[in-house]
Amino acid sequence: QQQVKQSPQSLIVQKGGISIINCAYENTAFDYFPWYQQFPGKGPALLIAIRPDVSEKKEGRFTISFNKSAKQFSLHIMDSQPGDSATYFCAASRDSNYQLIWGAGTKLIIKP
Amino acid sequence: NAGVTQTPKFQVLKTGQSMTLQCAQDMNHNSMYWYRQDPGMGLRLIYYSASEGTTDKGEVPNGYNVSRLNKREFSLRLESAAPSQTSVYFCASSVHRESYEQYFGPGTRLTVT
Image 1 (tube, rainbow over the protein chains, first blue to last red):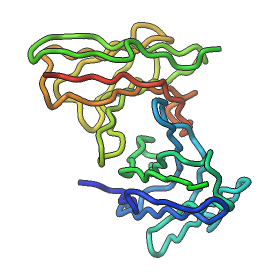
Image 2 (cartoon, chains in turn brown, yellow; image 1 turned 180 degrees about the horizontal axis):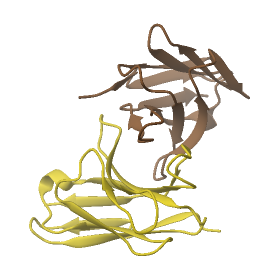
Image 3 (cartoon, chains in turn green, yellow; image 1 turned 135 degrees about the vertical axis):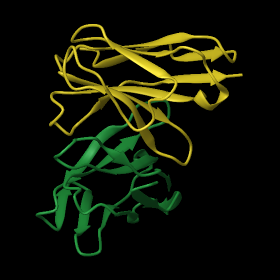
Image 4 (cartoon, rainbow over the protein chains, first blue to last red; image 1 turned 30 degrees about the vertical axis):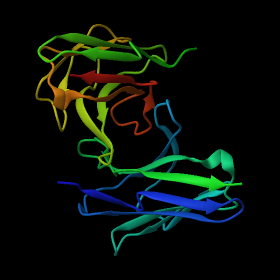
């Protein structure tokens, strides 16, 4: 049973545009929500993460928006660049067992 | 500083064969993990080791065994490979189990025919 649902599966955005990837979770006990970035042939790497006590976190061009009541969180990539082309994974975890539950991934292509 | 290294990078097995995937980290991390990645399914935790000397099952442990050889090394063994175990396997480590940031190796692409 997938506890973290990620959409879309794939996304094509023009250079300079905004890329938006969404995730929804079911378990209200989750309290840590990271986004990982994976390039072809590489392992995932942590991009940005948020706790539910804030509604937004920004790091450079990357922003996580968090909606606790809707049990949703999203990744926004501003001024998207070809170098952002990668697969993005959302995940969720809780302090009681620290295991990450992963979304299915979104393949993002930024067209020059 | 190599981070997390995995060997081999690629492997083809016949059904029923056995093999061990090796993982090592040089970051002095306490916790290590084995995941499998399948298309459309994200990453699924097979086993993890919160600290040297301990191992625990994750979401999909059936058909696998692990050994935390020392603080640096964490191996994954397939005793009798099955086509359903065709996947990309990732090893990861973190400072502690409570440190949510995990550092991943480059992966092993395994095909079982």
